[in-house]
Image 1 (spheres, rainbow, N blue to C red):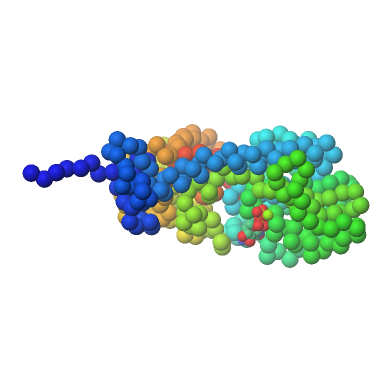
Image 2: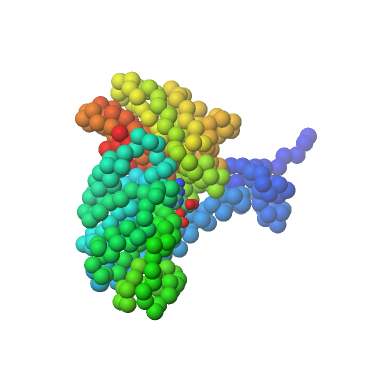
Length: 379
Ligand SMILES: Nc1nc2c(ncn2[C@@H]2O[C@H](COP(=O)(O)OP(=O)(O)O)[C@@H](O)[C@H]2O)c(=O)[nH]1
Ligand SMILES: [Mg+2]
């Protein structure tokens, strides 16, 4: 009779553990592999690293606390705030604590990366969209502009506008990581003349752990570029780097129209799905980076289709971190019947746009990612 031995598997993703191929599923260090006992709870290296990354969120929090502390100074000096948002990934989710701090100040909003949106995205609609989203947090911006780094704007004009708005006060530029703050400042610097005896420098902001860029605007006022606000609610950064490469757009995003009605569902790779529980067949448009693939399937077959796609990887992207149903959150929206275009947007991934006609739509998305329903960004 042969002998049997328990096969060691990762406690998180279930992959069979091995210690030979670092790039393949289930890899653990030979030390751990050879000394493992059958009753031990072991995670493969990949899951272990991911879980470590999740647990490091406290570290990100500390950076946000530092930003809050810097903003206390901004409040104390009645500073002018420039809040930069990336027009693609912004779905209306703002950091509440930061919004609470700056809402009494003079806030101006700059939407960046307009070039990533399709030509139907009109400046006026985008500005209204931004105004409505900020207003939900009690912020009434004094000005809202949208830019692309390919726009021909005169840097001198940027400076004149800012000088008129800040009324000799300091300026604090805030925004998420990669929202385009540094790119904006670089454009601004092209028209900048330093009339002070101080230099542009990166300083450790007093009593914090963070560095900020300090640009003297006059003998007694500065522009500060604050570190990026951590995007803990975006898909980007929650999943693998390979997934981020697919979902972060580098050129104009793609719009996929589909007719769907009750009983239909749309998979977005294996990362997310929109399920139409109730509603007449109508056009749904999905906006996402060019390499993000979608597939219409019957609602009944959705679970099987996702499981199969996790193996075959026909509809990209697929994440090895999303291995069970428990790794997803689910939300259900009952829409009004206002016949206006609405979006249900998954932060960092994309959004489904449709005319609200009383549909019931269920969305599944990676746990902890922000989902937001609002009037459409692009009409
Ligand atoms: N397509 C496009 N990309 C942009 C634009 N502005 C910034 N980026 C890119 O977005 C990324 C982050 O920009 P950066 O200015 O470093 O953002 P920061 O982290 O807020 O300082 C970089 O890869 C930039 O090239 C824009 O208007 N259009
Ligand atoms: Mg920067």
